[in-house]
Image 1 (cartoon, rainbow, N blue to C red):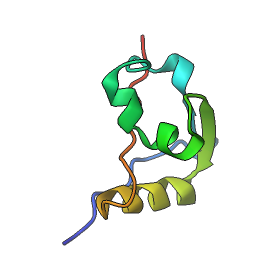
Image 2 (cartoon, helix red, strand yellow):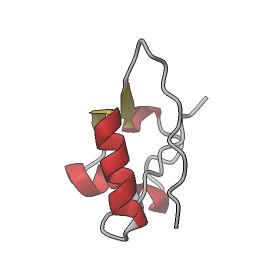
Image 3 (cartoon, rainbow, N blue to C red):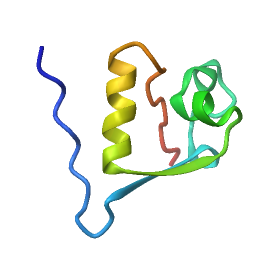
Image 4 (tube, helix red, strand yellow):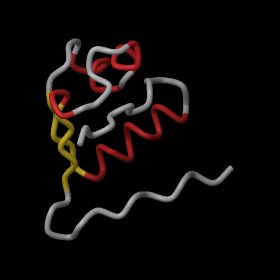
Length: 74
């Protein structure tokens, strides 16, 4: 089964910054099922590079970690 295509990241910024304080779902039940909460233990922020994003996505697709649930608030 083919994997989903990777999202394009701007060439000047090859990292993904996930900040729980900027997430519209912070403090909701969805927050407890997010990979950031799973990895860090409590809501915080994390910076991951493209290889790490791919690894986390593969773990989530394999059922070994929850998926990223981050939704940037406006």
